Image (tube, rainbow, N blue to C red; front, side, top):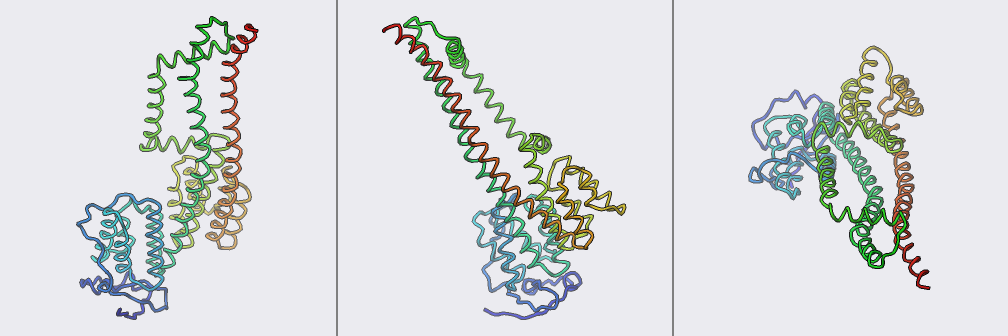
Length: 402
């Protein structure tokens, strides 16, 4: 393998003219100021998939985005150029749409488009925060470090999503089991007891009579609960897929006492994480606030970031605005205030995000451990009430026979 040595200075990223030769363009690479880099020529790597793969993907799962970012960080840190790195990553993509996406980005770069502009053309894959951080990395000639930071952020986000899924999986299974048992009792078991009581002409208690009436009504009009369930599922899907529905979910998730508190802290952690990354990447403070605002659709938090921008623009402080909002704990506000005073706002905000992530993980575990016995108690109460209502008349029959 032929390796070419070449030193690049920060100004070369934007001052150099576009070169028409593809081989020359593909030899470009990003290095830290003053540090020699290693460029791999495009001919040394297998070509990425071309247009035959079809239309580029308009969405990239979090797992694939993390894989792309990690491999870019690894290849750029090892001295590879951007174009050869994209060629290598494109070959590893298993889905044609994903390969077409990487190929499109590579083609744009070979045409003289900066990496940040190339990925900005795919807003469904790369959000504005991702593009802004990459643009800052290009401007400061620190793309390898930039992709390392991005991979850490995405890895934390994916870990939080996995924890939430793992924490809610068992309660969801318990709820499904409880619902299944109740349906079996109402549609199959209770009607058999009703026929037995009717044939024996046994008087039944009020609770048993109500239970039998409910079972008969559900069996006769089973389509009503089925239609209600279908409407519920349709409404949930519509709420997730439409802008109005997502906006409503974003606002209502902060209302429940315990779940709202957890949702608020999860939003805070992610917003502070993104804000710290942007500031540490030398993105302007006001632009960082505007980008961090896009982390959530919640009107309360968007209004908070609007207030922060207004306060900072007029000479105020971020920490004072956070404290006045009542959404952020005084401890976090004090940590951010210290960062403002010491000129290390980015580090302070990232530290606050670390603290929130740790506390959120503990809070999520506590809520899960509390929710599981509550579901079990409810399930036991329902099944027990049904059993008592059904067996009381049987006890009366056994007593009368004796």
